[in-house]
Length: 104
Image (tube, rainbow, N blue to C red; front, side, top):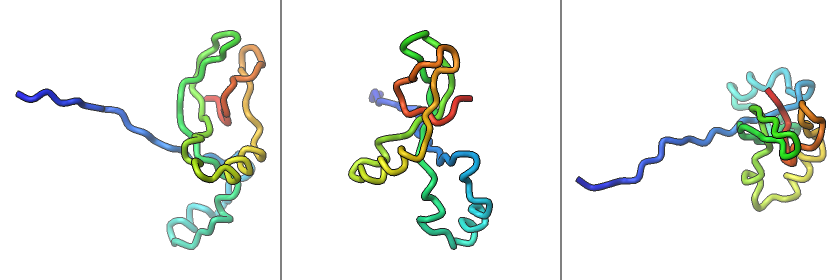
């Protein structure tokens, strides 16, 4: 019997919009294939992770910007990041030292 390496993980990305920036008709545009780049201008690609505060050790589920998705397009990443307000630790109020856009 041959030993094989097995990986049961998966990688899911989430498209995040600030709550007041989500285009109301985006779902219909995607279904009808009539969307444009402008429809996603206020979005950012994120990943779900458990974030830990380095200061107070608070730990919780968050959405963080997935920087690897913007490799080779630094200008787009900076443009998108400048539009966002990153979340602080809900326990101590200090920086989470990551690009957290949502805390659950």
